[in-house]
Amino acid sequence: MTRRLAGRLLWTIPSLWLIVTMVFLLIHIVPGDPVVQMLGEGASARDITQLRHELGLDLPLPEQYARYLEGVARGDLGTSLRYHEPVLSVVLERFPATIELALVSLVVCVILAVPAGVVAAARQGRAADQTIGVVSLFGLSVPNFALGPLLILLFSVEIGWLPVSGRGGWQHLALPAVTLGAALAAILTRMVRAAMLAELHSDYVRTARAKGLSERRVLLRHALPNALFPVVTIIGLQFGTLLAGTIVTEMIFSWPGIGRLAVSAIETRDYPLLQGCILVIAISYVLVNLATDVVYALIDPRVRFS
Image 1 (spheres, one colour):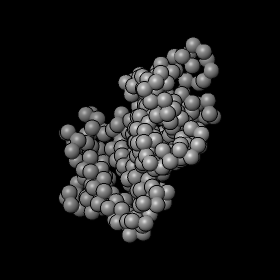
Image 2 (cartoon, helix red, strand yellow; image 1 turned 120 degrees about the vertical axis):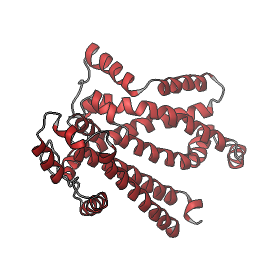
Image 3 (cartoon, one colour; image 1 turned 180 degrees about the vertical axis):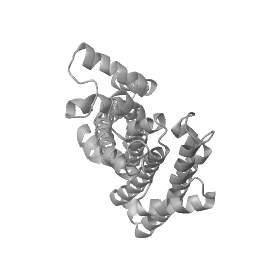
């Protein structure tokens, strides 16, 4: 297992290098002059020259790339043009809010999907299975930018149970977490159902039933633990997707996370800050995938001893 994990860790190095390179090229592939876009059309030539020098854009491209790699290695992502603070400190100040929202959304997803998937598999072809299938299809069909406002209208405007926006206690987390977790729960429900059906047709399940074990015990003690092995990988990938995909939800609910910060950087043409947001999100996704591989190897003996 150690050799497998070491090889997986080595494979993340090219991924991280590619991410850093693409983020560096972001400011160079923007149509037009990015410095003029940052300062506006009415900026003087002196201000444009000064900002270009401060950003190092007047240097040859290979030298800019070398300096950017060196800065990333030191944790120096430049200075935000809007906040006049180091980009890394601004991003890390907002990142915990995104992690909090992603974690709670993942918990909502698992709480909804695992029981629903188990019930659908146990009642294959019956009314419960068909109902869960329709509900999961509805969850897949409704995008976040439509579900979020609907939840706000219902639970905040009409009923008045939950706040509309902001970050605070669990009341502020409820609507954005459900918005993010609903679509992922619909996907995960189908995967849990498929994994459970595969296990329920296995020889060891037939043997357990032949021994007279109750259906509840067969499902929860025998089939479900084995069915969750591949599901763990999907959950890890979904967590990475949540970290990278909270932008729309954060904008709808005014959640002060890194996704909203990235949109704000676009609106204010703060390209160093935008580069930092994209870099942190992308690296987080790669590290989450690596952590998922580690967890999967630890819980699955077939991987651990291969």
